[in-house]
Image 1 (cartoon, rainbow, N blue to C red):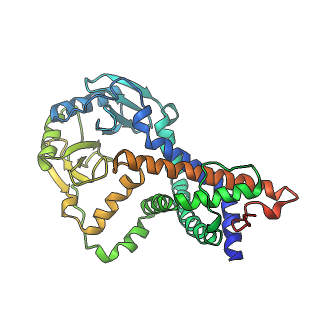
Image 2 (cartoon, rainbow, N blue to C red):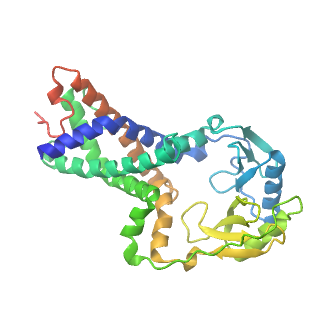
Image 3 (cartoon, helix red, strand yellow):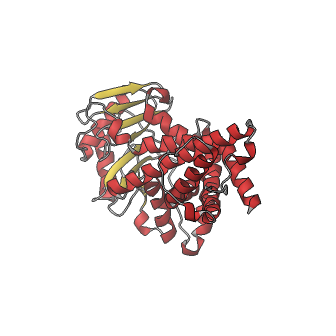
Length: 358
């Protein structure tokens, strides 16, 4: 038990601040739809192929090198265009460009997303966040084990009663055990998204062979002659009752246009239903319907909406907000008291998860 306590204490002291950063950025992103206050943000989303085609045309006219357009939805009534150089634009339902930016630092939701997912470090940062998710799982489990011996002194507090070593330890262990179920959910879903191999291994008993469609590589390029209304209408015909959520331009000139839809049974806001369309003819060349997928892919599709509180309504969002803020307090106070203790004459007493309550 002493070794477990030592590992918990030292590892928490080393990574607590980074976990707090992830917790705070994630919490702010949970309420993204509430603080994007641009004109048109609360408009009802347009859904007809002609209206969506107009948004695509405006996005193309606004700047060269269009990468994708995420269509307006229930969370925000603006279309978001992203370009290859990292710039972007918000487009209102009437075709007005309500905001333009040249890089992610000009839009808080963009750099907060990058901070939460990549720690502003690209793919290397994404791997680090995955490792931190595994550590959070370990912290939550070991913290509950260490708490059990002191359970009779449990008292839930949102903030330490005093700024003493013992008070911070009591707050840390009691808050941690209350938040542990939610922290387990957040850590598990986040880690499985970052490391698909983990989810593939865990879900292998319910997985079946799922061949992805082969996409043609000899199509004509997108040009000024591309009829975007025809493109959107053809794609919509592949999923008549689904909502078009995102259009992705071909990465090479001979590839099809990809369009994502969200069907009624999907939890992911942008859906996982794909239709690929020829830029020249507007005809469907391939589709990937998750309704035909296996049970494992169904579970994987639920990871992000659970993690980001895109399902469950207001109560689940409040629950995940509590989890995020709890992680901030647990991480910051753990690191602060640990390192303060290392430079204090009483260092052996700071942040000891099994310190006596007396």
